[in-house]
Image 1: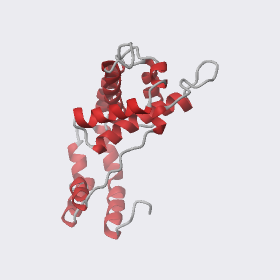
Image 2: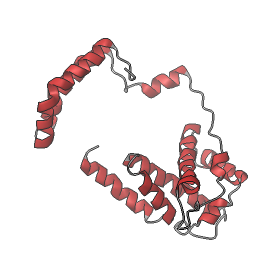
Image 3: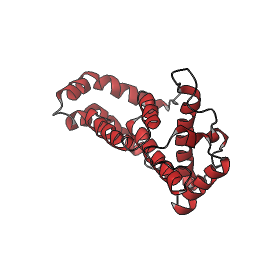
Image 4: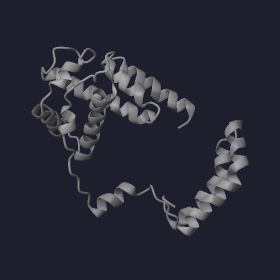
Length: 207
């Protein structure tokens, strides 16, 4: 992701955070170094859906922006199960999508319980209901797996096109950007050789 696109996503994240509780902003800030902007933006979308549901279900008297930590700490397993059912039956989310949104919430609650500290060195929340929630078991058929990875793998006819892209086409695409173009010119022989070795020998990721 180039700098301009990254800034675009970061600006969108800031827009979402402006209408989310302060502790969400703190959590997102703590993850900027390790997670991509697109992942963080998805987190924000997930939290907006969750907090809006809390307000709609009268599980908090506050607005989305002003939801406090106590409201999260007193959530029951049954209430979270109701939220997951809402995602599936009201929003039509697949089990995989529900797993992703639940993982987002687990990450936030884990931060509040195990990483964030008050001024007297105590966790933000003592009770973490999300730690008790299990992800959906999702079994994919071979056809589903094949469809999911289709377009993400190179076939034999694509090998030479990929090498050509590394050796020449990438530089042509970025010839107006001197920094990228010069970097490509300097490294293209090395990069082409490395890719040729990987493709030709079938090296695994670990190797």
